[in-house]
Amino acid sequence: MADRSPILIWHRRDLRLSDHPALFEAAKTGRPVIPVFIRDHVVDGLGTAPQWRLGLGVGAFAKRLGEKGSRLILRSGPAREALEALVEETGAGAVWWMRAYDPDSVSRDEAVKSALKEKGVDAQSREGHLLHEPWTVETKQGGFYKVYTPFWRAVKDREIRAPLGTPDTLTAPQSWPDSEALDDWGLGAGMRRGADVVRPHVRLGEEAAQARLGAFMASKVADYDETRDIPSVDGTSGLSENLSLGEITPHQCWHAGLRAREEGKEGAETFLQELVWREFAYHLMWHTPRIVSENWKEDWDAFPWNEDERLKEVKAWKQGRTGIAFVDAAMREMYVTGRMHNRGRMIVASYLTKHLMCHWKIGKDWFEDCLIDWDPASNAMGWQWSAGSGPDATPYFRVFNPETQLDRFDKERTYVRAWIAEGQEQPSDTALSYFDAIPERWHMSPDDPYPDPIVEADEGRKRALKAYENRDF
Image (tube, rainbow, N blue to C red; front, top):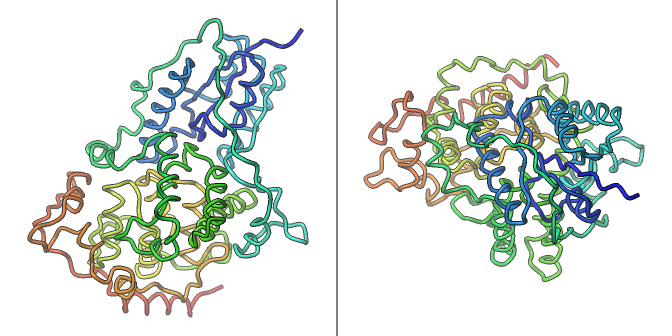
């Protein structure tokens, strides 16, 4: 007789119905499908803003499942124990999930798969979070890639499977297991009053992600090469937020980009390269997991970075009060929207690690707490790239000058005025929103005078270069 036992689909960063290999295959079997989300140590270990955004995403996905006549079962505790309990309660014969690639998730998933298989459960992990599984891209010598450009050349012409559709139906079990209440979890409670400020900037769920992709391809991708570096222009896709939680897949984005390129839209090629930059980050994290917590180039362990977060310079950087307009505007954009323009990310990272001589881990951890589009691989590689300690990194002697960068990318100071209220007679709503988002204990007001630079651009550059020249490695 055919197996009619339920299939548990363990959802993590795959909060969607379309192009979901595990869910799609489970639906095709005709067996009952029970979607599950578990609040385990990986979820509890998330920073404040990412955890809050995850909670919103889980709620939106549960609603989508409800529209399909299904449910999302919520459980908390160690993943293995939660899944074993659900197998026992439901008689499920299979547990399927989409792969994760960060070190914590990998070790958890390996333990879960081993334990379930020992109990005779069909435990399977499926692809879908990446275009290319990290172990499938190799150099001619059989190793992994450490530089982006040859990685791009190796994968740019590979065949990428077409996105899968949305299952027509999801067979329900005869009876649903008990579920915890999402509101009781209090995910992201640490956002406090900032949640009301950031929430209007969230594009929540699978449908919003698809609409975002469609709008970008229709009206923005053609000029992407020029507009993506202008922080005052809405010239990027904004899809990092949705990709981070799997509300949309890289496959869907890739094929949309290919179509745009075939239509002659010049910026489409660059968009495809940016998708592969994300792939490169995961490729590196898989092969060298230390990238998320240690200097990728081990000889940088000897570099004299400051690691004391109590320094007034670090506090000023976090508060967007460095006196360097590009840095402060970018940091404030993050507090109001939960995201930061990519040009801003490079500037604030360079300023912290080079002008202020602070360890990249300070910045990585702060972004991990503040970004709603936080991604473990991209965040780690981005910070190490900026600091000089990572693979394919910007040379340490390349120190972004935040003042000349501002002249180049925000000549009219549109971006600065949008986010910095001090000194303006009529500050913008976005600039004022910053003071509603930040902790009250910071005691900041738009009526405060704008600060002088804590470290001048030229002074910081000279100090960084001196440290580099005198490095002991």
